Image (cartoon, rainbow, N blue to C red; front, side, top):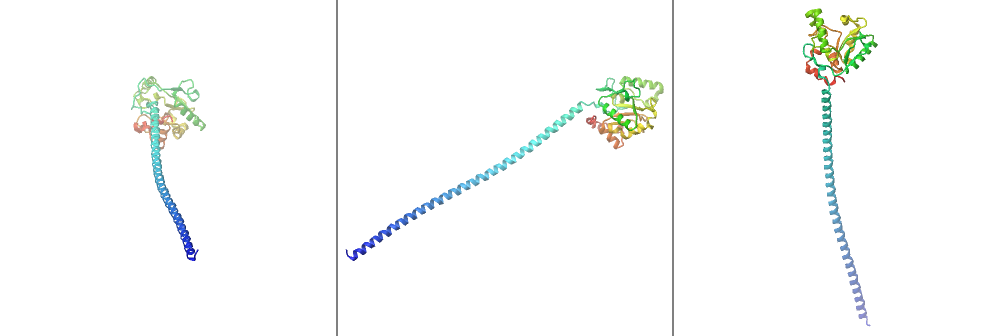
Length: 293
């Protein structure tokens, strides 16, 4: 073979090799670009999915916030509703308590209001004989007032004030008989110290007349006794007030005559130095709900 043919052969082989290499390179480049394109597409898809996920997350957060607000609103409504129920229950309880409390017990009698002949307190108890001036006599008091009365008398005794009850509940008929006897003895002057039947606080069963060991049945000078001084300083703590203090407009001064009006009202009268009969009836009625508290 001539040298030229050898050279041509080598050149051809080189060309074929180069072309083959080029084809390989081109094929590899095409595959690379294909993979790159696929990767870009996948990245774009992933980006889109991430964007959607982010959007979904934002919507979820908004929904969660909305639900939280709704929950807060419902809790507030429930709180209001619960408060209203409690308020209603309290109102119902108050009305029920008022309905069961005898409104007559805080009325202003003594020439103002009238108790008819059929009125009787719902419950009366006999005062134990050791608390009475006349231990053979039966004297009764309203059953809800009895504990306050006995506590007061026991405390008074511990402090050297020996209180004794000389009169308690008197019925319409009892008061009528008593007033008639006073009129027989004192004439029209009896109106200065004794109420007509139907106008006596004693008919309520919440009022007592006191005396002491020293005074006995002659209790007209009770206002000068240490027992009276103790009552002035302490009776309000047990719910008792003096109905007819000095200078009252209804009857003569009666230091022995004490009426139960409940601790709340008695404390107010004591602190403000007021007389029960100087208050408007509407002011007094506000204390009816607290009468036996």
